[in-house]
Image 1 (tube, rainbow, N blue to C red):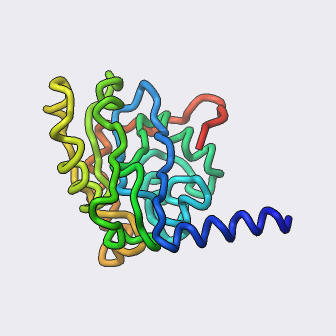
Image 2 (image 1 turned 30 degrees about the horizontal axis):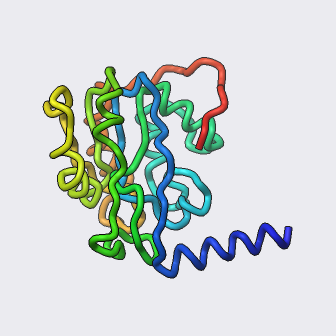
Length: 199
């Protein structure tokens, strides 16, 4: 237990000191119709190795409503519901230097984008890209859109309001209304028997 606490302490120190941070792996399968992109995971998500792990982030309650599952399910089950609904998760930025969790704290010039053009080219069912917040959308426009394969150029790219607790001006009901435009692409039916999901 002591060794585990030391490891966690070292991770916290490194993340908060502004060293180079590595993002999370993509959670996307071949049936993905809706690719939700964040900018870069916050410190809590990086510590937990889970997307949207901050307890005040509205992403999971929001997607639970849109996709028809209980937001209190464990992470593996929530990811399974998302994938069954046709949703994949990743971030535009795969590596950067940052102190804390805010996008504004990312050191300009330290960003390394994830290989999204290659991923998008390998998703034949993809119908829409949804950017979670203005920073994610700006990063997508800067690093990803110019390199998109020809077949993906016409894909709609939605700039949706951030689910981050930092975006306190947007209540959960307002977020539901804005993100509700994804409903035509979502499958809110019950998924098959639970399967382990990486994360």
